[in-house]
Length: 482
Image 1 (cartoon, helix red, strand yellow):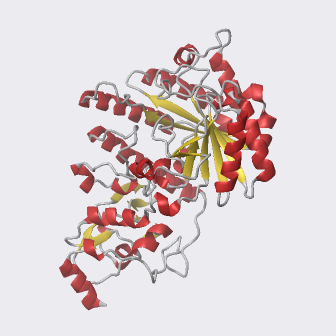
Image 2 (cartoon, one colour):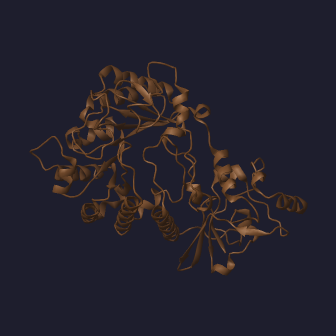
Image 3 (spheres, one colour):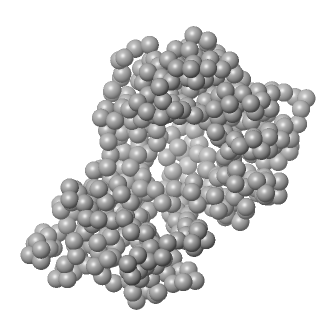
């Protein structure tokens, strides 16, 4: 047995390493994925995040090293409750955190494209952010930041109001006490007109997310730009190339619907052929697009079709030159304590009129305050910490440590067997990618003769052990064995 990666530090600080007692009857953790590879079988613990390599399945027994890393539990343990307890212990309420290090600035809610799936198309405040609000926003961010921070420019289309970004970044460059950088979510159409020097050096843009919906006419018809005399697809692709050749990283998002799988397949092939040599500066991911709240509820057949398209597109991405980088960007390996920026407590969104929200999907409602006031609507803020009720199958799902959603989220996945199939596939693909990178990067040799490659775990003296999830008889046995 080799322990390829030990427990994550935050998990270790919460629950410590489990004490081993040979008199206790153990059962396997329900949070284990076993993935066969050439060297044996990789066992991944989605709760503790430890990864071990065994020669075969017969080695998966409750040894001291595996028990210490929570691959096994005392018989009778409520493992679902234990998982929920771990996540609850690590959660920091917004009112306790409230140390913003991330800001999303909506320079405008207007856009030069007319995407049919856009959730912002009915939003108010179509006017651009004024010079005054831009300057006041910059001052507010510089004052509220408690350390290095990031600014994400969003919209609408943020590049249709470059003056606001000029004012904000000019002020921050001259007056911020801390280091900062910026990112952008854009359709990419105006990037060349703004210019690389301004984007990279004045605005300090390090990465830009751009959504693509197909190639050539497929893309142009979906985007429906207001500029009728240009080939928008060609212009955006050239802008992507311009950015990556000037050290601005590009993340390309593919929005998956029930109808557009063929169009997305074409853009995946196009991107792979066009940017094969530049894949270190591009990542590619897809995401299913759900109906708006006011539309007819999903049928099971519709959900299955959407997720099957999603699975098919992800499988196609996995065969491209971008697949290796995606090992760092997928969520197969994340202990999901927070759902998003809304409940994390370290991010505020600033609307074009200076209002504050905690979620980029709720800039038209759910206002928590203003940059012009110290008052906060804690009732609204607290709504973004209410967890969605789990389904019955969540109690035995091995993906549960990586899954957390709040009731306010308009993009909550509609879980069913097809989505569970995708998540299982995603985790297993992530394990294989992780192991390939591990092997390729020449991982360190075992230390002190022990078959452990990454050693950093020590029992944590002040760890919060969670005995309430362990059956009383097992707790007593463990106590007697100490």
